Image (cartoon, rainbow, N blue to C red; front, side):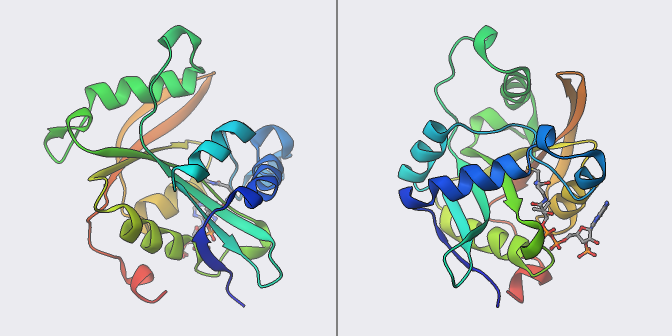
Length: 198
Ligand SMILES: CC(C)(COP(=O)(O)OP(=O)(O)OC[C@H]1O[C@@H](n2cnc3c(N)ncnc32)[C@H](O)[C@@H]1OP(=O)(O)O)[C@@H](O)C(=O)NCCC(=O)NCCS
């Protein structure tokens, strides 16, 4: 049975931490990374705040197990760049310098999309497209543009972001010795065929 997608609650935090930890690049062997991985592990505090702001959706089995989640969050008040992890500092810099649809991203109502993570046993069941449809509907009045980064070593994620979400690659960057793609999409964009069937 396809998992239910709903807004996350504080009681989901343990499940989110466990899911993210299980798919963090540092906790997977090279063969497992072929199906995707998480590049940055979020703190319990960040996840709780994002839930309180209505920024996290989860996919839950009928038995109540969290088998997927997606974050869509407003840009934070950044501390000085020197204290940011390199990947977050690079993302901030790109938002300040790049345009999307001819307008600087920083001048649009933009959100950070991600991480997104679906447990291995729940993949290939339409949860990803359902996440895209539900979050577009939930946030299109609040944001114009979503930005995300995808590791160059994560072709599954790049494929889904470009073909199913419809995001465009705007730049590539390097952080912590690894390469990433920086992408953007319109929240009000047309739903793809995959989304319409979910
Ligand atoms: C990335 C992720 C969210 C996608 O969800 P999913 O349920 O696997 O997505 P779907 O099954 O709907 O689609 C997977 C697509 O990737 C394709 N794919 C699978 N492996 C691939 C690879 N190595 N290279 C390119 N495409 C690949 C599949 O063919 C399919 O595309 P298609 O439907 O056009 O044939 C999920 O795999 C995941 O959570 N992975 C681990 C964490 C992660 O990588 N998160 C993203 C980075 S933040």
